[in-house]
Length: 74
Image 1 (cartoon, rainbow, N blue to C red):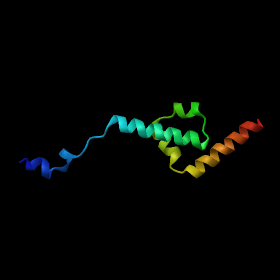
Image 2 (cartoon, rainbow, N blue to C red):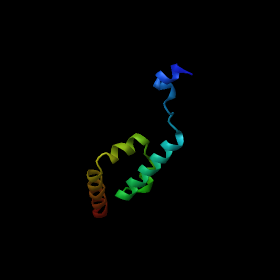
Image 3 (cartoon, helix red, strand yellow):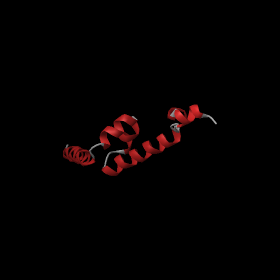
Image 4 (cartoon, rainbow, N blue to C red):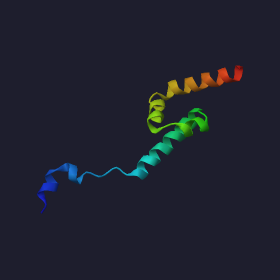
C-alpha cells in the first residue's frame, strides 16, 4: 500500500483541467453580455478582467447603462 501518496494530499489532489477553465470563461462572457456589455468588447477582454467586472454585477450593470445613455446622447 502506498502510504506516501495517502499521507501527502498534494499527490492525490485532482489537477486543474483546461476544458473546465475555458467553460468558466465562456460562461462569464455570457454573463457580461447578458448584463448589456457589447460582444466585441467582451471578446477582447482577458480572463482576469472578466472576473473583475463580474465581482459587483449591480455596479457593472449601472456603469454599462450609463455608458449606453451617454453614447445615445452623443
